[in-house]
Image 1: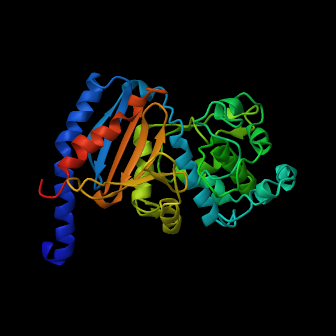
Image 2: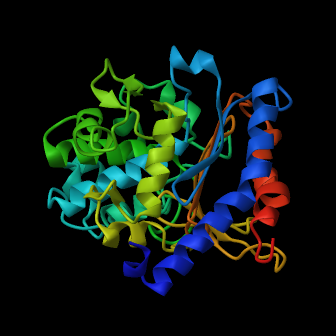
Image 3: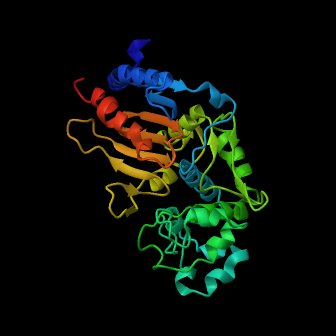
Length: 343
């Protein structure tokens, strides 16, 4: 039997097993630490390398209700938009927002800059609207939107701060609007579309969305509740460039477009694709890989490392705390060093 396996396949298999073995001990240790409360505020940690789970712990209380992913939801919304484009329901990322939201068209027609806004501008957080979630004084800041009945109507009435496509400004309203665009395009609610075309194909056990405007709208910008093991499946999907267990869910072209660097972020080293954070390892002592991730307030993290064939998931409740980013340090200081060549 083994004679039928090519040398290159055998070498690839050996490389994969070596990577998994290298990550095993630190991942097992971190999982044990999270389980025993060494890192309070973290509910789950899962590390998978080449399809092998090398470390896993999930708080039993999450069986009652999945964790709130907060803004990691945005990256899942990017996948839904890609599926809709693949299916021809949305023409392209260059489609004008005002054409995709016909009920709100007048809010865009009255401002030439707003009329020029494209779907891609929303996906890259470059809508140009006066909306910055990182600035409490911003007119479109998310907490102000949450106090409204119709979030998308509130978002559409915001004034323009700059030309669309010009600069990055993190705005949850952009992604809530994407959910409305999706619903209009596919003639079903965003949560129903997600269930049919993403979560059922991924064999996800359950997904709980938050709603607004008397459940008329789906919060596609945050607060999706998904089990950590199902969030891992999302990472597997991205790692496999849109396929899961051999079944095509979203096109390779969309995964490539989604994880392509689109814009820089002032004051930060990271880049941004289509609602995914992007970076790469820079330390020559670490294995070199791209880093693609979804991130949510509190410690929700889905990290995909394509060159290492690895996915890491964490969920937590360290809301509005800088130490919610602690898993990034686990990755830098403990997990990646164990996977460097020669280890």
